[in-house]
Image (cartoon, rainbow over all chains, first blue to last red):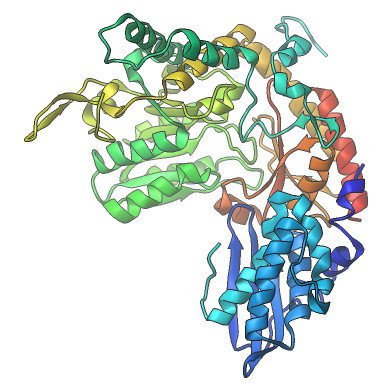
Length: 148
Length: 413
């Protein structure tokens, strides 16, 4: 019955969504921002720690669906050790991938985020993927509350 | 089951009136359990709207020509139908706008700002749709009105003693509460609410968006001062809603929006207002939609509210029984008097994930906070999935839902 949702709820998504490793407040964060999807009730706070022009670590606190939790957890994996500018680029590429199923530059980092691509077949769920990424950018920009 | 004096309800015939129910979604038969958000439309409504555009359409209240006169008759005829539907004494007490949200904003603007004085209070309940909360918050912030929230009990009913205590200081000018919760299905004791409000000098507005779909509403028996509903949940089109309001209140209220159709005379120095209800209906109204609503009302009345209520009571009993059999499901709200709206949570599965899986099984439910974020907080949940029934819903469809939910539970186990 649910064969065609297994692409979305892949093993990687299930694992990160149910047992996220980056959940929790980052004790010595130097930036954070909330993301809110008022239509559905999903809420995420992303915490970052910088080392110069690099994100050294990221974490999140969230209430939400498996897709948004998995996206947040994969994101924290992907951005650790990345330059701020690269992280901005990644956020844009993830949005594109969530909408189209394709990545423009499928490098090693984007390949690790590939499980999120399946959401493009579920248009009403794309925002579940993009919510933590938008909060991350807001945290980098220093804004308290991100735009929806 | 005792079937004596049970009105006839031919479900197959009713379903045959809804072309969309024959669709497939993701290759599965379409099971539509989201009628509380917006109901499907019978072919009679669809046909009438096409027919008016093909055979009998012009602007209303303006033309000195045959086509405009006929269209005006049809449009104003719907006002009479709505008055009859709600048992309003006078069709001039029916105001059209695009939906319940706009009508509640109209009351907040014209009665709240126009008649109420700063320092007076408005009571809403804890289980309001945002449409019956946010306009009153705006009134509070812009006009110095106090906003009071009547609590609900844990089973999802209005806490009547607490409600009465909020009225006691005599400062409440208006009580604005739902007649049936879009989240819990709770039907509120509207007659008692109105009597209590009136005993303390307050007017009462009912948001009947859900209630009018499920049972007969009699605004005189309720002694409602304002009663709003929207057409698209009552098997009519989007873009048309209607309000009953007592004549003396409409007379006291200033107009809502300015423009054509709502004026008596206009000069650069001064304008005068049209008679009620037209002073609240600026601009060309939703003519085609109103005519569609009129046909929807005829269609509902032809089936009859007794038959509708009987079918729904069966569905409520059946759905609650089937849901209780599914491991990990919790249905929110256990009100004694309830309609066919079932919000639920499932152990280990988020509402969105449930809704996505059901969707792939052809089943449409809603997931989220249902435009009732404060109620979600009161219930201690972030979001719920919601199945809601319509006149066309069958027990077989409830079986499809229940069986799918068992599979969803296994998927997320």
